[in-house]
Length: 219
Image 1 (cartoon, rainbow, N blue to C red):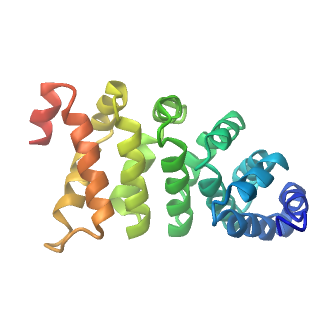
Image 2 (cartoon, rainbow, N blue to C red):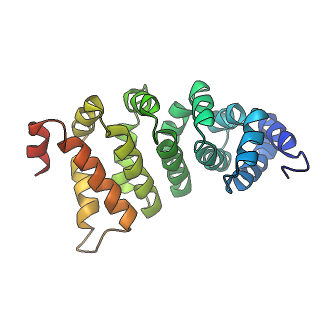
């Protein structure tokens, strides 16, 4: 598709809206899944980040999920991170965390995770909002699916890294109990995945690293 010049057509389909946008976004998601630089660069050059963010804001839940999945892949590239944020993608992804669809929550959380990897500026902006991602991410920890919980914990780990304001806000929205529950497992069962356990522990470590008061709340 990339070699044939099909990326421009796919992005145009996303911009068109309606059912076409849903399928075009799914194709962008598939093409970007390889994370090959040429594919990511082609989607970005065709205006993909802006088009996908617009679908994220105005599409139905399937279109939003497909757009979030494509943005999740695109966000692995620093230049795309900037474009996604500049077009309001951070706020749109936070809004999608409130979806009742597990796949939508998973892709939104994964995109927020990738947007904030090695990017303190994005992490501060997404944690502070408006809207802040902290409360919605904690909501996913409490009631989301297994995969969504792992992505939410990873995103929270990024958001609270060297960010005392986010650490305090996480405590205020009740984030510590569900993080601790991920480490303990539910109903005596082990954690859902090693990744979930690692990210939950990392988030708690971030909080505990700053102020003694926070250590007391955790331990």
